[in-house]
Image (cartoon, rainbow, N blue to C red; front, side, top):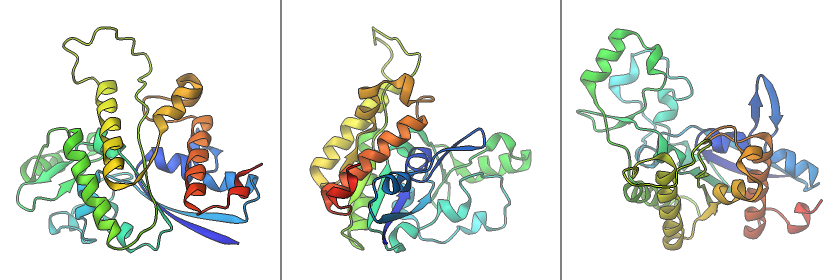
Length: 266
């Protein structure tokens, strides 16, 4: 059986759709391999997933944990230093790379005052007070990443990936529908999340035009079926949503020739 090696650098949007979705302790969607089995493709996918704190941090990662963090035990959840500073995306022999704009859009890492590196203090509410004080001394908070800066960082990351591989690069956009939002006049509301998402999605289209990367159009997929069926909240998808996005990934990979066309037909 042929194996398709996918490196997925992103958060729950890419993990839930490609690897698995678990809700209340129950696996509700078993990832892209569920589709490949159902379609009798004769292909299996190995999904290597890592969380991401954004394109700049991923592009600049050296694989070495900075000295300031080595001896400090912090409850960082899904963002341990080994992942935050991982360069595995450049070393893994991938047939496909899957990224997402969600980290650039929603995560706001801090920057080390002397070393200049980015760091995501995940789970800060559970930190000891001494660790909180250390964070304030050692790191400076950063403004939210704006679309143009995010795309420049993402384009830099794409360029670095292209020095090690010509494998297809797929990038998820984000559904711009924010549940419960019913705004009809946007005066004074320039910074609301739905508008920010739309700006990022448009910037990603422009990046695709420049670089040739493929967009996994989560925004369109959710809109076609409806958010009530496809979304749990602003960024997390239901089982049906995960399946639909994974089907779009398979369709794109079919266009690239990574999966035979006949294998995608039930």
